[in-house]
Image 1: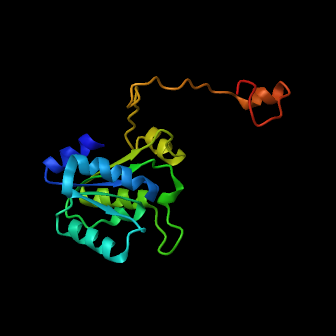
Image 2: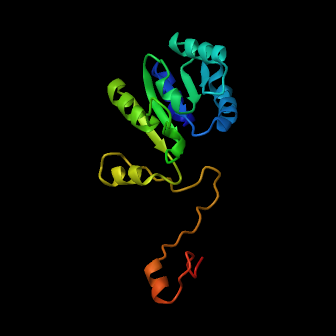
Image 3: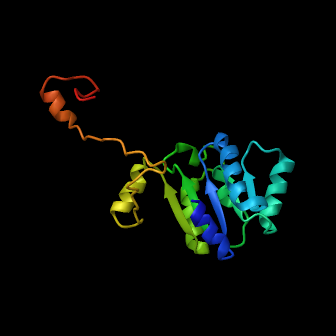
Length: 177
């Protein structure tokens, strides 16, 4: 994400990084501020009205070109977004359950199309809709072959639970598990 955000900034564009929980913003804010300094703004509902307005004003004025926040940050008033990143895109918290109802992922797609910005969905466990769209060619699918920290990927096995039932296992857990 950092390299992609840097490329956008180098092109004179802005970036939005959406996270599913407010609790994730302080850590990311620290990392992003370490790389991009005062160009970073944070937008989420736990900010006071004046804090939120100050951050919104900085983004609108072009002082902050990197926005990190929860689903409402997808509406950040930046002039030229280059990338909109949804980290852990499968999380249900990207869907608003209060009026006005919206899904940050769909707003990101619409905004990306309208403003010619890349929309990146990041996840170790993508949603079924995201995987379906990728398999249908509506999204490009990039698969990491190594972990960020260099550790081996976990061993995964596909277990056909119909075979478990045939062998008499009526549990929700396979024998292998």
